[in-house]
Length: 94
Image (cartoon, rainbow, N blue to C red):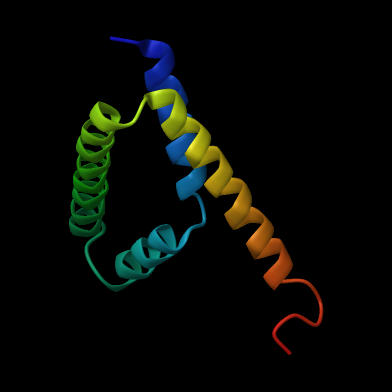
């Protein structure tokens, strides 16, 4: 097993999930009921969505070279970041 990849993936997903809408929804559910039921439900959902992403990425890598996928993902992240910054500037959407 590639432990460096495990650590990198863990860190990226953990940081990306902090404070996002999924975590806030989970916090809200936990305030309403059993924390263990909420933990099992939210952890299961994250595992299943990760499985879908891994299987989709693996299938896509059979058609598109992984290096090209990384470049496309990088460009998309930059485009989304610029779009978010542009759309949240003062006076935007007014």
